[in-house]
Length: 56
Image 1 (cartoon, rainbow, N blue to C red):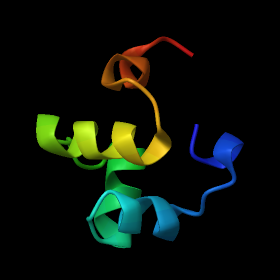
Image 2 (image 1 turned 60 degrees about the vertical axis):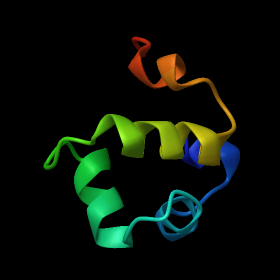
Image 3 (image 1 turned 45 degrees about the vertical axis):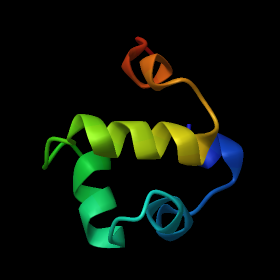
C-alpha cells in the first residue's frame, strides 16, 4: 500500500511519527504494531484502519 502511494518507508515513518527502522520491522513482521501505531499508519496512508487488516 505504501509503495502504491509512492511513499518511501522513510516518508511513511515520518508521517506516522515513528523511526524508519521501526517501520521497517513492522512492515517485515519482525515487530508487532500497537493499535495506536496502526491508526497513525492508516492516517498517513489516508485509509481507514480496517483496510490494513484486509487480505491481499
